[in-house]
Image (tube, rainbow, N blue to C red; front, side, top):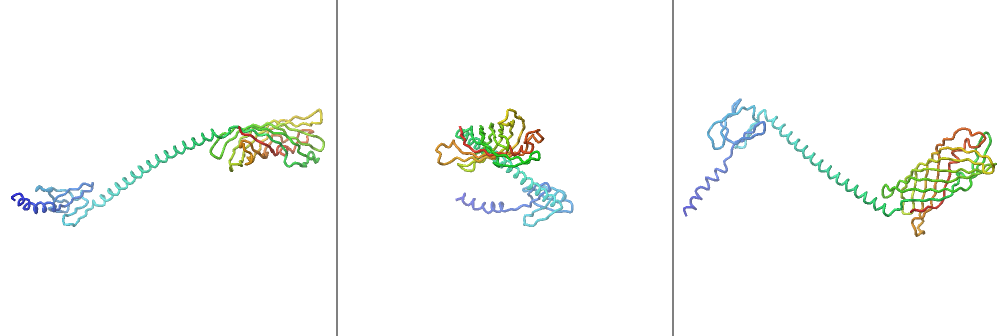
Length: 308
């Protein structure tokens, strides 16, 4: 009974002590002191700490503001400096957070990039396992147009194309799912006739081309071909002229794999060789090829191919 009476007696005192409010003295540097303000002068303030009776003084120039216990506030000149400091700290914190977020995002991007690269390499490895690496093509060369008339040495010369064979072997370097790089070597012959003679030219070429997959049955090749040497022959004469030249051409090829062929390694191809530069651009004496070098390197090849 005595304990209960003691608790009831001390409870109001404890509640009063807990509800006692103090003045808050906020300095320019951000420090805060809780106590009781005794006096606010023109240059100093006088205050006591909580639970102490000793009077302390602080210059007003070091203060930002005072929040009195009764709810009233008093600001000083240092408040602007205090607010700027708070703003700078807030901006610094935001900047730090942004840097941390950027770092995390960068690490995440690098991780995703690495995973994507690994996935890409894995897919390419699978393609290397399943896709044929070597390509062999055998076809028939025909000059385009088939018939052409060109003035040579002030004389009109008529050209007519004759069938000629062409063979090519390529190696497949896979770039991605739909594109490959195919370095190629070809050897073949172009044949044609003029008003008086039949001619044939032996071709040896190196091609750098890209193969793009259109769908499961159609592919497109495009690249640059360099051919040398070319031999001009008058096949129905004992004597003939041999001229070595270098020709640079654009090669465009269409590859079609018919759906009715069970073995997908066989295909039909159409190549167009379009020259844009030849090293022979001067008179060759009595030969009629002075202005027809580009014509004689423009040909169509149609044939069959096999992947292995």
